[in-house]
Image (cartoon, rainbow, N blue to C red):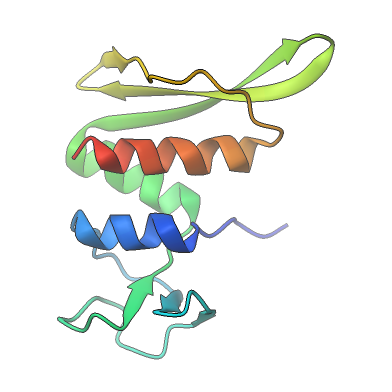
Length: 119
């Protein structure tokens, strides 16, 4: 089983919001995922975006910005689905859309993206 890396769009937003942790993969400007050929940390270059695992970005959001991202299992119409909840400083953030996701990873990815927008 392999950990899920964040998407290209989330990686771009994470860089904009100051994420700068060591990672093994990155995306180039064409959104191609590759083994990190640069240093393990950002430099001033705009030609790549570090691609952490979802769990690493989730931990960074929690520890650095006090934002918790939760993907929760729900059963809706006898179907197993997931929804996201965000908490900032222990206060629940109500998202403008209430959408169910087919997989935990899909829900978590959206939650991470929405959490980055709070910074």
